[in-house]
Structure formats: structure tokens, C-alpha cells
Image (cartoon, rainbow over all chains, first blue to last red; front, side, top):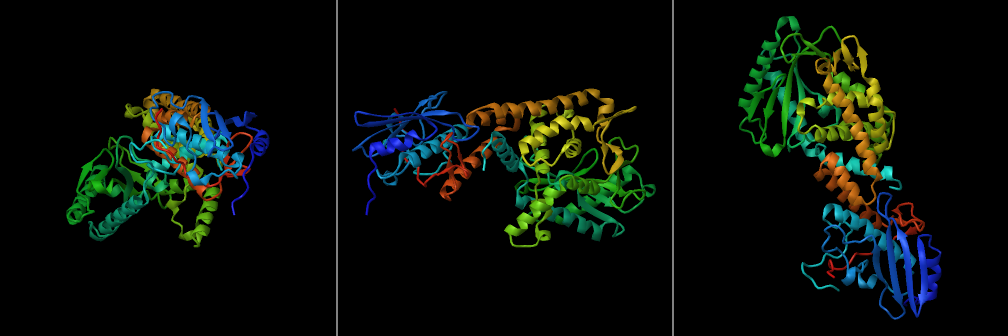
Length: 137
Length: 385
């Protein structure tokens, strides 16, 4: 039996208590969260934004700062169009799951592997290996 | 896990030197080879006795790093003749050893892993092997020093004048004692993991923090003096001073910083000039060259300061990619790249094993993070705007 869907209010209540949160609101049926993540002691600190409205399949995750494509980075690994982070296979996140315990840690992990990818040119975080030239999901 | 900048830098430094350390199979092949040389010499050389070949230097100390700009490891050995120095001369000894090595080559040349030739160097003979073996054997002719300890030797000097005192086996034992507690504990841990007795763990499999300190210093030295080999401090000098300076630190980054700070204190100053005595054979001075070339001492101390500056600077960067760029400048791009990739693999495996946590206070990922990171797979195709 499928678990109960979490409401936006429930998601917000838990996100608000997360210390890395800098803002968390619901406006016109859309949950909007911003937080500061530093994935490792030697990592940069990133501003991460999550946006989610009831009825949407999954939250969208973006990194407003610092610029992910700065300094010669042309194409990013594991992103959708508009550089939304691709953090999981479509069936790995369902609306009964708390964003705090899934999307937020996964975003931090994405950022960790992003820095390693920038250093080595290879994605060491695992996951789906897209075919060359595949269309964005 | 890796909760501080120091722990993370230490991990990157360790994996950087691991990348250039001698691989297991190469270590075994080199060991088999010097043993074969020793056995053959003992059975076939003139007199049929009194020929012993044993390892020395970094191969014996377990502090090997791949030489800069090479893909072949140096394996240093001693060919010790059980004769007195009065019964030979330096030139005679060197030629006798050279001659028997020629015979050895002739007897083994046809084997796929056999030696292909020999070259004469200032102090030693170098045996070359098929490129695929990735090592060469340096054989240093020596006679037993009957006036000193059981492993003491006399070696030919560069100008073939006075015999030089040395004792590589006793030095290796001294070096091991400088990190004895960690050595014993590590051996026990490895034995427990392998469900065997500590004695069954080969010595060279045990790397203490001191081993890694020496490897980090040697690698930095190789890069720093890459275009100025004449000024490059000898490994034995670096190793001796680092071992003196080692205080039992467990964190590699801290240990290297402490070492470069303290190493100059162990350079003594005598009326004849600077002195870094071999701790097991005080008649051997590892800082001998500084007496005639004082500028080399200045370069050495300048290099030690540079190591400290480079490491502190790397640690001050934020962004693993930026840290990697900084470390690459000091240690070379290839090994640092591998170390950073290995760090990524470690985090991925930790999450796959369900042990990665997330700290809600910072976003930090580690095994101590309060929120377990559920397993998942990164998706997407490298999107274009």
C-alpha cells in the first residue's frame, strides 16, 4: 500500500527546522526553499533552491550561487534543462517522502561530486550514464 | 570520517602518494629478482661464498615513490662481500661485482623476466630489465665492516679514495623504531582483518604515518627540484630528518607540517660544517655535500618552508576542484587527479553501503551526519541550456 502523500505544509514545517535553511515559504501553492550547503570541509558553500507545488511530479532543484558553469564549464553532468539537478531515478522519489531527508542531502552529494567532476573530468557519484547526445529528460 | 579540512587534505595526500607507491606485484617481482641475483652470486661467483645481496634505501624502508618523469622504479640493493677491505681495493671490488653481474646477465638474459644489460654508475651497477617489468636494480658493491655492527658495510666513494661507512639494514631498523607503536598496531589490525597472525603480514604492507610523511616530502621534492637535480636533497637526508622530527602524529597533514617545522633542528653544526649523522653509523654524514656547497643547505631549508606554505595554502582553498589544482602544482597533476577521484568513489560507496550521513547544520556529508543519506542514483544527461 502506498504511503500517504506529504502536504506542502508538512514539508515546510520540517524544512524550516533545518539549520542550513535561509528561507522557506509557501506562496500561491508553491513551496520555495533556499539553503546554504557545504558538502565537505574543503568544499565551497552553495546556495541551493528547491521549488515544489502540489501536483508536480517532483521538486526542482537549482543552484543560484556560485555559478555552476563558471570558468569554461560548458556542459554539466547529471542535470536537466535549465541546469536543474538530476538527483534520482524518477521512481526513487515519491510525494510521501520528506524533502529534508531526500532531496536536500542528495543535492549536497551532487555538489560534492560536481567539485570532483570539475577536478577530474569524471563523474564519480554513480548513477545513470547517459548515451552521448541523448535528449534532456 | 572526513569531518575536518585537515582530515580531508590528509586523505588526498595519502592517496596521492599511494598512486606513486610501488604496486604490490612490482614489489614482489623486484624482491624475487634481487633474491635470484643473490642466490646466483652465492652459488656461482668467485669463491662460491661470501656474496650477499640485500635491499637498501627506499625499497627496504618502504618509502618508494615513482621517480619524476619516469615510469620505472629504482630498486636499491647492496652486494656485500664477506671479505676485509685490506684484501681488495675499491676499484677491484667494483670490477669484480661488475664481472659477476655480467655473468649473471649472460645466464639469465633469455628469460622473459631476465636482465637485459648493465650500466656502470659512479657508485653502483644498474641492471636493466624488459620495460614491462617497470623497475631496474641498482647494485652497490660493498665489503663487510668488521670493526662495526654485524650489518655494517664499507662502500666505495665517488672518487674512489677512502672507504665510506654505511649500514643500510641497521638504518632501516632505526627508521622502523621511530614509529614502532603505530607499526605494531597497524600490523595487528591487518592481521585481524586477514584472520591471521601478525607475523604473517609482510613488513612492507605496513605503512605508518611516518612512511607517508617521507613519501609526501619526497614527492614534493621531486616536483620542486625537477629541473635542478643537482640541488635536490638526497632521500636519505630527508628520511633521517623527517624520522627525527616525527612525534607520533596520526594526521598526515599535521605530521608533514610539524616535520618541516622541526627538521632543521636536527641539522647539527660542527667546526667542519653542517652535520646530519647516520643515526646508526655516526661516521657517515648525510649532509656531506653541504660542506663544499653551502648554497645547497640554503636551498634545502627554503624547500622545507615551501612545503609548509604549499600545504597550508591548499588547505585554505574552498572547492575540492580548487584544492586539487593547488595540490597538483606541488605534487603533479596525475597522482592528485587519481586521489581526488578516489575520494569521490569513497563517498559514493559509503552512501551505497548506507553509512553516509548529512549534517543539517552545514550540509556536510560524513559517516557522523545525523540524517542518513538514502540510496539513490544520479540521473540526467548533461543538460544544455
